[in-house]
Length: 219
Ligand code: SAH
View 1 (tube, rainbow, N blue to C red):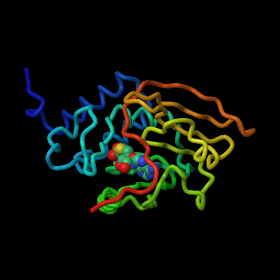
View 2: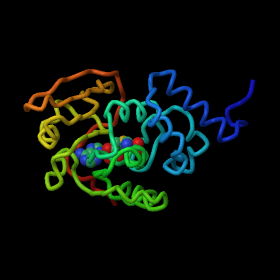
View 3: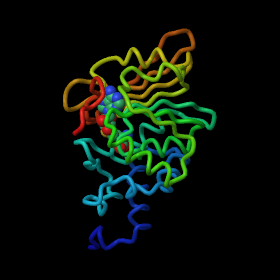
C-alpha cells in the first residue's frame, strides 16, 4: 500500500481527477481546468500537503476552501461558455474564481473579508488571471452596477431564495447556490426561462459556511 504523501504531485492530481469523474464531474473542459490549477497555491501552508485531497480545508478568517468535487460540480452545473460574464459571491481563497476565470470571459467576485480579498488578489496576479474583477463588500446585494450577468455562483449558504441575485441574472441565465439555514444545505440551480421565471433543480446536499450580511470587522 502506498501512502498518499509518497505519491508524486502528478499522481495525486491524476487521482483527484479520477475521483471527481467517478462522482459525476464529467465535463472535459472543467476537469482540464481543475487539472491545470495549482490548488496548493490557494491552500494555507499548514494544509498544503493535503491540497490535492478531495476535501474542503480551512483558510484564514474561519472560512474554507471548497472541496474540489464541489468546485467541479458547481462549475459544471453553471454551463459556462467563453462569452459568459459571471458573478461569484464569496471569493474566499480565490480557487473557485480561478477555475471560473479560465472558462468564462469575465468573472466579478465579491468577498466580505478584506484579508481574504487581498490574498486572493495576489494569487490572481501571480497566475496572471487578468479577467477577474474583485470587490470587497456584501455579496448578498450582488453587484448592481455590473448587472445583468449570464451566470451567478454563490459559494456561501444563502438562508433562502437569493432574490436580489436572481434579479441580476439575464433572462436565460443560470444561478447555482447552496440554499438552507442548517449545517447541511441543498445545492440548487435556477435556470431562467427567458420570460422572468425560473426552472429550479435540487442537485445534491452540501455543507457551506453561511452567507452573512454586511462586511466583516477585522482587527
Ligand atoms: N469559493 C471559495 C469558498 C470560500 S468559503 C473557495 O473555494 O475558497 C465562502 C466565502 O464566502 C467566505 O470567504 C466568506 O467570507 C464569504 N462570504 C460569506 N458571506 C458573504 C457575503 N455576504 N458577501 C461576500 N462574501 C461572503
